Image (cartoon, rainbow, N blue to C red):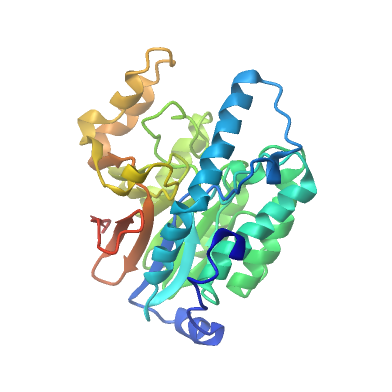
Length: 360
């Protein structure tokens, strides 16, 4: 932490016993959330000296990301993290991180584990005794054969400590009061476990799905990078199961701040996408680049080199009741009660509320 200038900012926010005692019966509470963080540091060879990518274009893109991340974590990301910690108050029960915790691309399994450990030292260290839950992203298991096994071993132990119960998989659940939180590994979906967790949590007040890649396609070149994106039967099955539960999906991946509210399959799904990759100073501003059901899928269409996926967007568009997209990055506060569910967005390290999203 000291090497990044973070140490002077943070102190533990609460005693673990006080937090644990509050989780059982909460009707009103909040959760502080970070989107993708892509933790990294300068110089680039600190974590990436042994990384090898044989595809020239991918190598160029990845090495540009290393430079981006190092510059971002030199100043802006520590400021964003500091602001997120300042959102913690007496009603805060947990902190979440939406996957792509690290950049990955280490080229060495021991370095990959060290990167995970360093990152948790910074981010978990910032939140102190407040439980921190993270979901696996694609970068968290990328860049080295066996990185997925390193992540699962490391993070299963970490999540077990955070939640006070055994977590053996990257798909798991926990509760805050009467609300169910189901964390899903979208890289390798464990359908049997997802089905079991949905069954076990029947009757909860709210169902929250935490997943790095989304349930609804993003209007981007990676529109198929969703839960069961290329498996239409499984994709529609779980969409229907989530709709039956009127689920709220919390996700990341695309480096945008998005809200999509959809009705269909006999129910409702609200998807909130969060982003903490503050790669440019101007992304602290909440500027909407696409809004309304009619615009869904039109950003992708501007790139004529991409395959036509209009049928995929057409499948979802009629059910959209609210939709907005921004490239903004920052931190978020999920507010949950009997009356409503909202997300407060703080762009960059803004002291003032930037935008409030009404989820329910």
